[in-house]
Image (cartoon, rainbow, N blue to C red):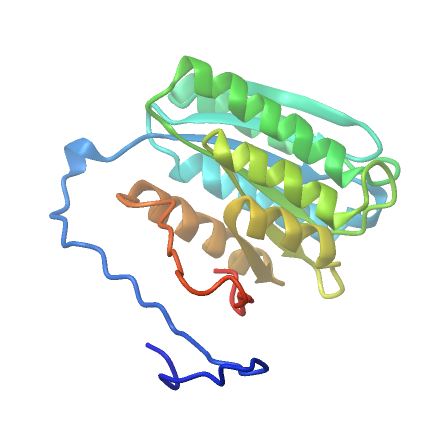
Length: 242
């Protein structure tokens, strides 16, 4: 729907177009619900000491509890280094025990290479994807966003996140704390095909992450593209990335 039907032929006209996409109705079928391949990336740098890291750990434990048998989980923590604590673990009783132990062992350390943590998480998700090609693949990054090591340019991170999205691995981020930095987190989520969540308290962080997991299982249409056709002299600006 356009705000006006005509534009001045000599140029310098601005018109606004709203696109609504309605998907067909699909009956829910529990048997067809897809399993998840999740790489959970947790900021364990010094700025996360105290409540922020505990909130991230509480969220991770809630995720482990909510994941279903057959789902796959990798756990990565990062500071100035990045560590894979759990790689492509299939969720069952033993898998959940290993995941919980890995989460509880996390402590803060050093500076913050957010990009390095995301890269390792993406690699873990990609490796698990090769073994479980039918799963939905996602990196979920929990951080205060205060990166000071590694790749800091949002545009570069956005390019890499878009490349991973093209391979079938999306990225969502959660900003933790009252003064978290939005720059890198937003770039990863917007270009990675996921969402950036704003949550301050532990129960809110867990709530938004678990809600996204539920939505991921219900996806039946993605990568919807809207094509605008017009004269070569027309330029298009996207006002809302979502």
